Length: 84
Image (tube, rainbow, N blue to C red):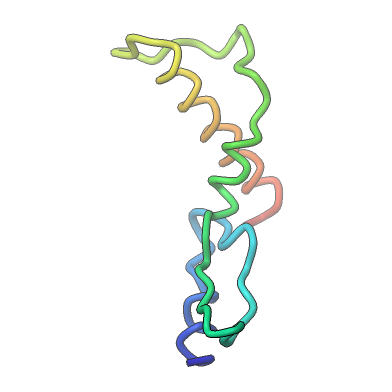
């Protein structure tokens, strides 16, 4: 059981930074943890508000599309800054 859990923790960090909250290998009271959100998703969820000069992409029809694009643009910049 611990081996399979440890293998899950070794996520491919090249695109998303790995797990934001890594699980502890092994069982805990019969519950096998999950790797959860990636560090990229965590950074995207905590991105600051969209700056006024962050333009609209071709085909975007609402502010949610723009907001999502900004969040992941920010997250990718954070990962680059960390060297992940």
